Image (cartoon, helix red, strand yellow):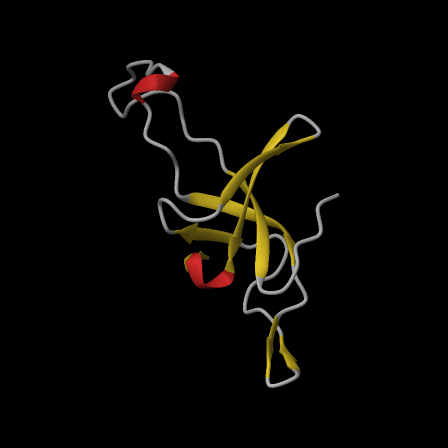
Length: 93
């Protein structure tokens, strides 16, 4: 499994529906990239003045993040993104 460092998190995109509200099937090229994901791993936290400040998010949280944030990677056939906690805009409740 991926283990992020510092104040980084690993997220997995939540699949969007492939049909429009009117029931029209949308090809993958017409779908907008989702900005909602589930956190699958978190780093230990940010180090400030020698003290580690834990992150505000945890594994399993669904979050909204900045559109162009992070680094996309493929690990064991699954697409993930690694980004800093500062790039997370909100937790979806």
